[in-house]
Length: 251
Ligand SMILES: NC(=O)c1ccc[n+]([C@@H]2O[C@H](COP(=O)([O-])OP(=O)(O)OC[C@H]3O[C@@H](n4cnc5c(N)ncnc54)[C@H](OP(=O)(O)O)[C@@H]3O)[C@@H](O)[C@H]2O)c1
Image (cartoon, rainbow, N blue to C red; front, side, top):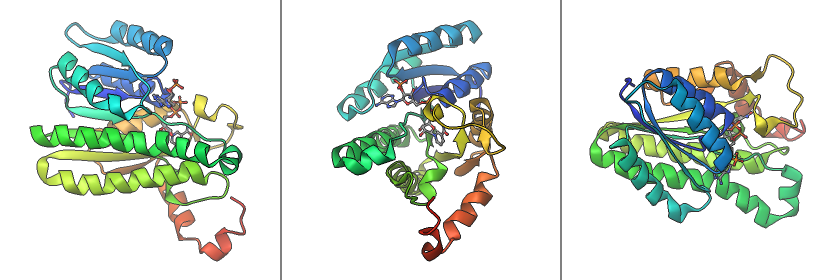
């Protein structure tokens, strides 16, 4: 990654994306930000413009990313505003109320739409555009929750797991074309998404710490990163626990 990068951020108003956007601006990147909440998006644009150097572009567009028919247009506008795209960063997501999803199949499918299908649609659109130009980077935020189905959050976990598998295949497809695909798997992060959790203990990280990890992974052309790093070891154990024992653990 170099400082002349033109980056499109989907779900730009997420706490993790905002922290990442600040670091990208610091490094000289031009950004096109897509967010659903117009007020939060404008506040972010204003903040980043103050931080940007002359010549760095900070542009934005408001969109609900659940509306997949609108994605191609967002890419067109981003390409026009930035004179091309080098990196696509997909950050949006929603943490479902698992009990409510259990009571409602339509709600389950809606959450899978937001956390998996809309992200896959954006990654697929990005892939075709970047493959044609012969270079680029696609970064998407998955989750450690996607590594194993657990009774307490398997709707979210299933969506993130589907996303991880899609990105794995996409990475293999795009590697010969000079396009890198990076899957970010954070553990517990202190953001609005986890507002209702008790956030104490060494397993919790700040969005800033995750953002630094994302930038480092982008630079070093990694494929999959757990953030912070210790989640790699935690999930290695969780993934290898026998199902017979796991289903009695009420996790
Ligand atoms: N926080 C964690 O512990 C954690 C752990 C692992 C992975 N992650 C993942 O990290 C990513 C960023 O989340 P975060 O923790 O930074 O939480 P956050 O601050 O709550 O961000 C979530 C963002 O997604 C946006 N969003 C949701 N549905 C959307 C849609 N249909 N169209 C456009 N935007 C939409 C929300 O927009 P609004 O502001 O309009 O609601 C919000 O900006 C997500 O993919 C999440 O699943 C988070």
